[in-house]
Length: 379
Length: 146
Image (cartoon, rainbow over all chains, first blue to last red; front, top):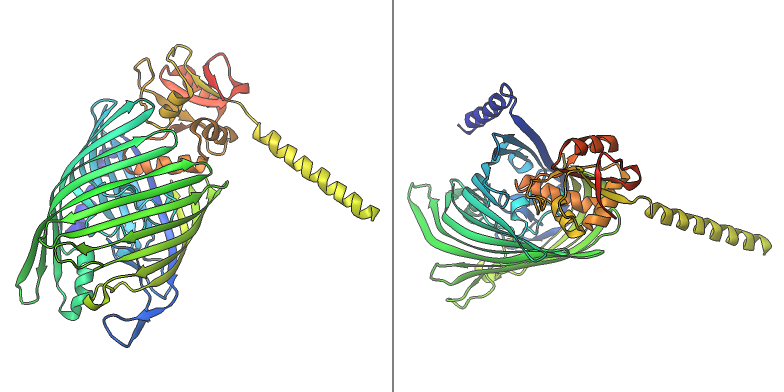
């Protein structure tokens, strides 16, 4: 079904684009990345046994590294088409092929843009939720120094939504501001990440998990000056998670979540400081909270950008007074080398430390040391 | 001993020449910001920077700005990015890749040569570009140099 829909969309774009000679612009981005973990750890699910270290480099798509070198965990190729439909209206589609999906192309983004005025832009369609500072372009490796935004923070099972955005830009003194209101829904049937955890904890009797985020309503405020770019975000959404069991029964979690975030970049030539602080609360009666943060220092020296990054994630239940259910940090060291105006080579070393509460089974990630290297490009 | 002294001297001379070459190279070109002769909008460095990062979409005369750039291979691009935008070309490219793929902006249109930039700007009252100041002609108006 999806394949037919995809074909239909491609034909639509071609039919619209060619005979009328509508203005259509193609651009794209990609990353070819190889990596592996370097050792073994005690297998939390099979006491007394060892398994390969695993680094989940992409939680949403479950792109993982183990001891075997793979290109599949993070490599990606994306083509963007923007069709100019008139004075102020355009249609954008991003066709994305990922290694984790065996490079089967999918339309990840498709939306209409209406530039009502110089300062007001409306968008409707499918886009990433502007959750974290790097969320909206987390797959465009060329746009940031590291191999990836820290995966232990960019860990949500939902990253995209169907909805509307209204962006309003204005100046305050020497500062440029953009305030964005957004609203939408995401119905993820057979969610990849939740399905992965079902297999991890349930083994062969694992089931399909549907994850629905509805009434995603939020605002973010971006303010930038000569040497800084800061972003505040707040959004909330209802959440419905359904686990379908083999005997056709199911159970359901109904709750809601609130996201608070503050992130940005500060240019202190030749250094750049990047940071992101986030706090998520869930109204589930347990007082579930997810405090996370990232701090990174990048040194810009000609075409080289050596960097370090520290990212820390926590998971707490304040009403049960149990701390440290799932807790981990990643210390990353790497260098980006810009060898062409539109391409960069990166190599990164990640030291992941699982500080999860072992007796309750929350230390399932396991420690890992990972080396990854690759090329990011745009065209 | 004398031989050692000579080679040390040679190394110093070589070193100084390399340094002076680098210094000369860094002071290589003056960047001129150019618009159509009829464009009487006001331009200061902050305004130009905002326009070229897509943060301001119009000139002070109210007309939407059409941005033109030289190719990444033209050394004037690196000069412009360093002196006006205050970032390396790679950082500017990274900025635009984030704007393009989130649908929030369109980078300046690349022109193949200086003469093409002059031709395009002299033909369009809303275009703005940059070039090596020494090559500017009366077909365009220089509103700032850096």
